Image 1 (cartoon, rainbow, N blue to C red):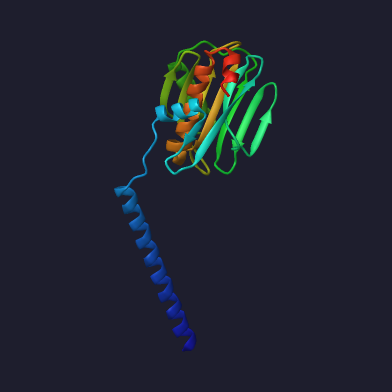
Image 2 (spheres, rainbow, N blue to C red):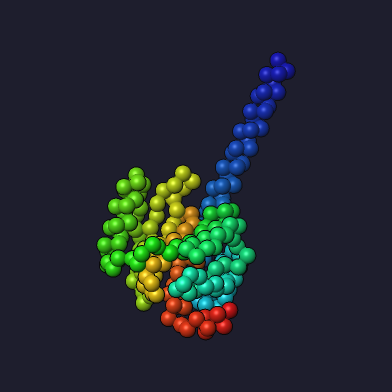
Length: 215
């Protein structure tokens, strides 16, 4: 009988704990709805990257540096003290943050990219994904002075990812990039990665020495 009483008491405590936990979650969700954390705009992100510093609404700060890669001298804008994995060679530059699940990758293709419209490139991307039994939904397509980029979402075993793929129309026309993070971070790291692509486009129009002196 004593065991039964202890069991009932334990179940009652667990019930109270779960009820309290549920109430706290509902209260937190209500507070977040009533006082939402402000979101930064893409232009605000880009202005921060230009100045060398971005501060997210939660107070987290990112500083930047520019490194030059490959024979085409591509100025890649990187987040300082952020990456947990790095690979640099004559054909690839990979920077990954395994904790945040965010990455920046530049790759040199074997031959110049085919000249095609961004619409055709978009179709090529989605059909290529289907060919390997996955899915890509393109949410944005942009043509700039020195590069084009597509933003798309795709599912993985760990959740949906937010991807920015771009092709650089500069020099040998062989360099392509792929920046990504989890979709849940698209309003923070996703927007920041897009700003880094926009800044790369700007730097490609500037003399290399001027780019490096601005660091």
